[in-house]
Length: 206
Image 1 (cartoon, rainbow, N blue to C red):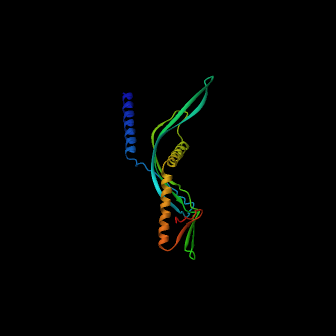
Image 2 (cartoon, rainbow, N blue to C red):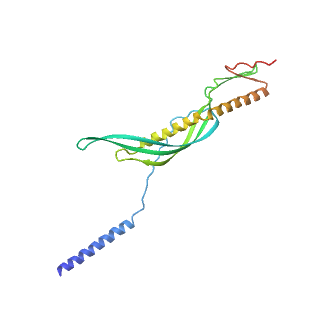
Image 3 (cartoon, rainbow, N blue to C red):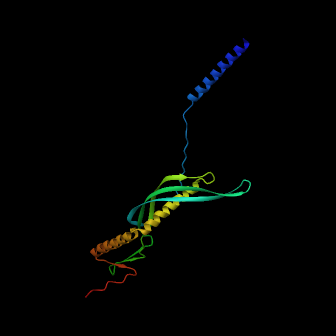
């Protein structure tokens, strides 16, 4: 009889304990999160850059890294573990001129405007986005934060290489020449002649 009472009391206590635990979890507050951001403004500088053309570039490529591991079980066994990433990178490449070294000399007496240190077209900026299509890693060779940084750099370098092989640079040069022609037109309208350092003067046909 005493055994039956002991079992009943134990069962009731277990039920009450389970009910208390359930009530505690069901009435617990929602999950809280804390976010903190630090913005550092290191340097402010004047930028004199002229974008003349922009191009959209897209590429899908695969990157594979292999890690060699030696296990002694009990004899030395050489194993290789791979990790690979299939990445689609899309970006916009801005091409133009850095005018920081450009010199402009205005001579009121001779009514001339001399342009010096004309820059060559260059890639001014690359705005890109990465889409990871597939990531495969192994036990002894997994992706780290450094790997993702390297993939990001590789993607940007690929966009830069594709842009240099394309017609963007030549189109930027043509646009730069068109801009100089426009400056000449405006200057001549004001009674000035535009001269380019290093450029041979035009020889009259007659």
